Length: 140
Ligand SMILES: [Cu+2]
Image 1 (cartoon, protein in one colour):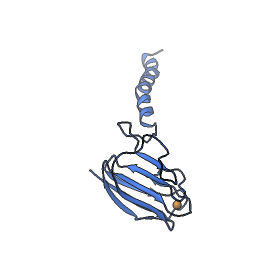
Image 2 (cartoon, protein in one colour):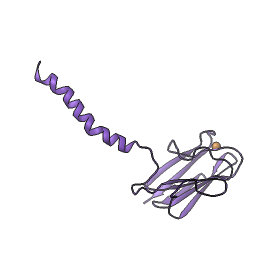
Image 3 (tube, protein in one colour):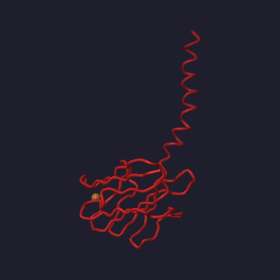
Image 4 (cartoon, protein in one colour):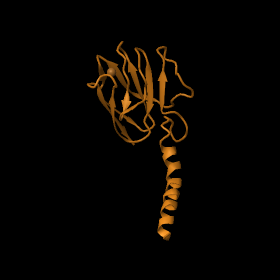
């Protein structure tokens, strides 16, 4: 058997061995920052965090879900600051940031805190109402 035929599978195996742990580390999908502190916090209708520890940092912007709309449709905050998303109506909503549902189903009175960790522009959508759109701008 020519040498290169033997080497090829070995090369593939070595490449996979090198790449897989990275893919697993990047794809864990948790909502924690690098320091292990959560970057998303959900609250029940009574305003109590449904997880511990909770998101830390000042709430500097707010998006309300009302009249099947995100109000306001544009918010700006700095890295390290926290966005409060709340549902003020009986319709069930979600808040998806760049397509990732971070809230689950939000009932009236539910709140979610989202910590800005990286500069950029983030699109906010709702699973149930395609017309609901907002933009979060995070500055350094
Ligand atoms: Cu909605």
